[in-house]
Length: 263
Image (cartoon, rainbow, N blue to C red; front, side, top):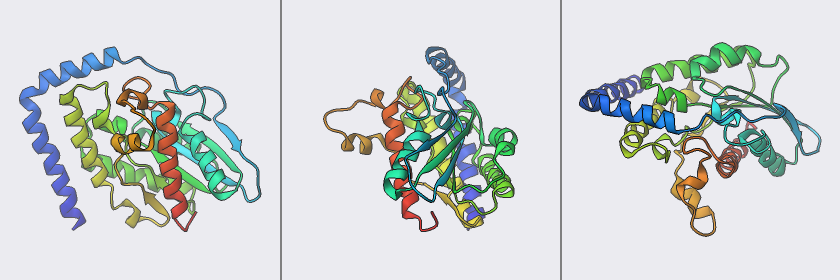
């Protein structure tokens, strides 16, 4: 059944490419226009390691991935996904959280496997969180390639951290990026959904590997906030998360983690 599903996602990918072919030059033009308009924000500054809270039985947390893990859009990692997640986990468990970030803006799953996984510490960790998907979508990688790269990434992590629980975080809401025109939102949004479905069974291939498969919906986040909140409040530059988004995203990931009995 899984092989059938993967072939189906791949066929949808090729079908979409054929349908988009007549509009190719226009989409390329729009993509270049967006790239020129969106400022190049730096990764979060400050230490890439830290300790959140006090308490016994520390939880050693490592996050690894692309710009959303590198903290693009905020000044420090304490304000980014990792710091916010560490804060949530400390509050939820009462444990001291010792956190570390391994991430590079612009990296794909293959880049992370080749360049960042070798930097994983040798000492056992308590939790690894993978944050990827945006760059593989922007580079129009097929669902099959994305799936293979993610499986190989988890396999590489397992070689260095055989028993550490691994969470694959939900993919970024590329189809809702306000910097993208409607046509690109449609194309990228469809592709990132295919990517999410293509890796849905990865947890069944490994022990202690989890996937937060539920897509991010800005409408649901708006409902959590008082007053009216426009889409721009969730993004620092129309593409990368704002501090608000990092907090909401980390809280959802933290709640998912706490629900897993393994952690």
